[in-house]
Image 1 (tube, one colour):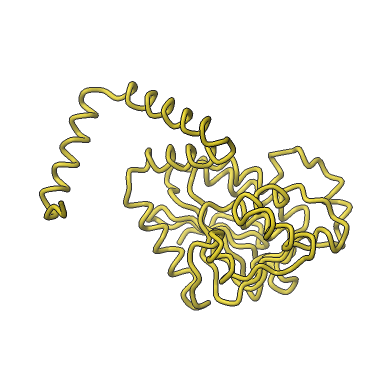
Image 2 (image 1 turned 45 degrees about the vertical axis):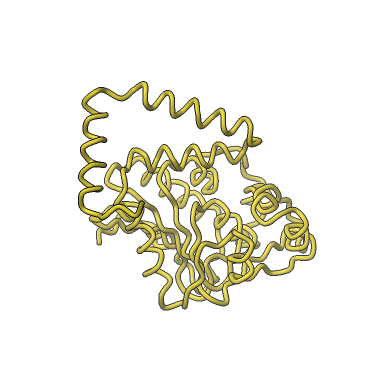
Amino acid sequence: MEKSSSEKLILVDKEQNGIAFITINRPKSLNSLTRSMMVEMAKAFKALDDDDSVKVIIITGSGRAFCSGVDLTAAEDVFKGDVKDVETNPVAQMERCRKPIIGAISGFAVTAGFEISLACDIIVAAKGTKFVDTHARFGIFPSWGLSQKLARIIGPNKAREVSLAAVPLTAAQGEKWGFVNHVVEGSELLKKAREVAEAIIKNNQDMVLRYKKVINDGFKLDLGHALTLEKERAHEYYNGMTKEQFKKMQEFIAGRSSKKPSKL
């Protein structure tokens, strides 16, 4: 495993198999985020997205919490910073990232930690994990997407209770409501996240990037416009293919079919 970060509070590890790990590494403070940590995380996602050797990114936290939110001793420094500056905004960089992002979440994901979780494409959570929105409790206005994304995933009524009453969303509830993909024992967390990453890496990587983008872009639209978007991108994709590429696709599918008996 190649270590490529000089900032010990945000660790970046790249493996030869195409999986990269970003670890929030401030366990004594339950991985609360300072301004400099946010900038480091944003830079890490941007650098990994630009790295052709990286196929999937797994984000996790060290110790008892994934991320307990913003370090409120540095609140003014964080909140009065330029919230529109995408270069230093980790969630903005996650949303721009072309590579699939898997959240390996354990312990607590609080407020900013919850929003980072919402920016992941797939979530694996340890049993007992709690996602908590404390914006309303502390008078903090959400700016990393929690007020909009959660309602679209679990429904507005459930989201209102989670956010207005600061009621924890447990990993088990999150899985039931379609927010969490897998709930596992804490000891199995990274193993399961890696298993999902390896399954993604086995597929056509150009299509993985295109597929993630069309899902995420379409999710922001109503169904009619999203279906139009899919058709437009499919048309563009097939129009860009050469006869040789079509031939290779057919040969690949034929090769796969010959190895497995038909279920039809």
